[in-house]
Image (cartoon, rainbow, N blue to C red; front, top):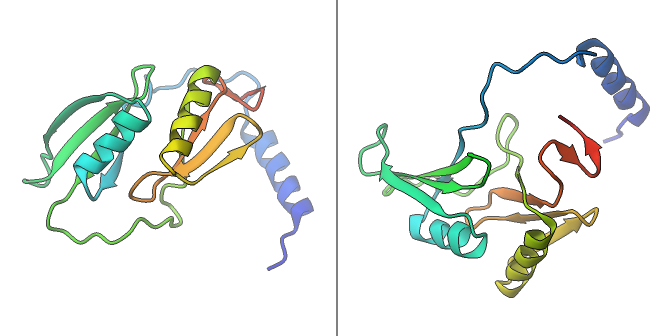
Amino acid sequence: MTIDHAANQARRERIKEVFLLPHRPSSSARGLHHVALISTDAERTIRFYQDLLEFPLTEIVENRDFPGSSHFFFDVGNGNLLAFFDFPGLDLGPYREVLGGLHHIAISVDPATWERLRGKLEMAGVPHQIESGASIYFKDPDGARLELLADHLGEMYGSRVL
C-alpha cells in the first residue's frame, strides 16, 4: 500500500482551514463523565488499574442493562472516571481494534508519577513502548491500549491542543 503523504498533509490543512475556528466557542459539554470498557475478569482488572496504575476504585454496582453483570469505576483524576462492564457467562472474545472502535485512552499524569508508574510497569513485566520521552503505551489485561502522558491536560508534546 502506497501512502500519499503530501495529499494527506494537504487534506489536513484544508480541514484545519475549514473547521478550526479562529475564536473557538465554549463547548456544550461539562467534561468526560466516563469511558466504559469491557473486562473479562473484574478482580484482575481492579488489581491492574487500582494496584498497578494507582487509579482508585470508586464504586461497583450491578449493570442496569445486563443483570448479573457489574459496572465498576476508577478515578482517573480531574473528576473523570474510567468504567468497566463485565459480562459473566458471555464469551465476548478477545479485544479487537476496529474501525469506529477504541484506539487508545490517554491519561495525563505528572512527570514524577509517570516515572513511578513506568517503573511499576517494568517491575510487573507489562510490555510497553515509550514515545517522545513523555508517553508510555501499553495494554491492559484485556488488550485495551492505554497511554500515560506526562503532559498537562490540554497539551500534547509541548503544544497546546485546547
